[in-house]
Image: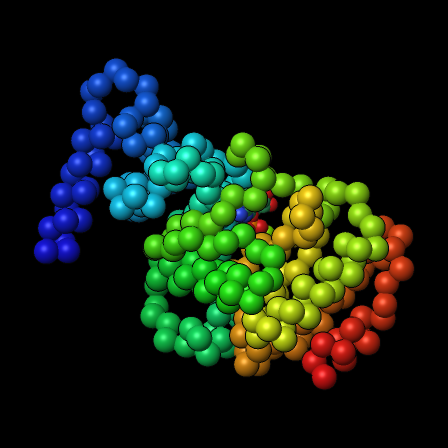
Length: 259
Ligand SMILES: Nc1ncnc2c1ncn2[C@@H]1O[C@H](COP(=O)(O)OP(=O)(O)O)[C@@H](O)[C@H]1O
Ligand SMILES: [Mg+2]
C-alpha cells in the first residue's frame, strides 16, 4: 500500500518534471527545469512534493542561503505565512563530522548504518532540539514539521530575507546578557547544550535574540556535554569581548550554569 502510493507519487512527479508543457512554472511552484539541479536530488524533490500534497506547504519560493551541508529555502504555507525549510543535503554531507554530536546522545542511541539514514536522523534531532527549546520558552524558530531530510520551521525575517545575524548587527550589553541567559536556559530548562553557539547561529531581531541551527545540540547526559558547554561559553565571550563589551570570566559563567 505504502509502496503503491510512493510509486504513484514518483510517476506523477516524473510527469511533472519532464512534462512537455511550455509553462514556466509547475502547479507545485517549482520553476520548470530548475527542479532537477545540483541542490535537490530526486528523493528530496519528492519529499517537498509530499509536503505540498499533505498541505504542510503551499509552494516553495526558492533557496535563501546555501551551506555545505544544508540549504535554507523560503516557502509559504496555505495561510500565506512564510516558512523556512532547512534541507539537509544527502549527497554532499560530511557526516563523519556530525557523529560525535549524535552517538553519545541517549535520545538517539539506536542508529542504523548508512549516510542517508544519518542525515534523516540529524534532521529529526534538530527538530527535537527546537521543540524542547520552544516548549521551554527559549527564543528559537518555532518547529513545524520534519520528514526525511527536510525540516520546516517559522521563517525569521521578512519577505524571504532572513533576519540579521548577531555577527552583522550593532550590539550592546543587553545582547551579551541575553546570549548568556539563553545558554543558561538551554542547560537548565531544555536540558541541552547547543554545541555550535556563536554569532553565526543567533539572529538579532527587534524582539531580541533568536537562537537557531540546533542540529548539533546534545542532551546533558551526552558524555561531552560539559566540554561543549565550555566551548560555547568561550566562543560567545570572545565575540562580545572583541566587540568591546565588558564580559564576565567564562569559567565563572560555566560554574554558575552547572552548579
Ligand atoms: N528559521 C529561519 N528563518 C530564516 N532564515 C533562516 C532560518 N534558519 C536558518 N536561516 C538562514 O540560513 C542560514 C543557515 O542556517 P543554519 O541553520 O545555520 O545552517 P548551517 O547548518 O548551514 O549553519 C542562516 O545563516 C540564516 O541566514
Ligand atoms: Mg549555522
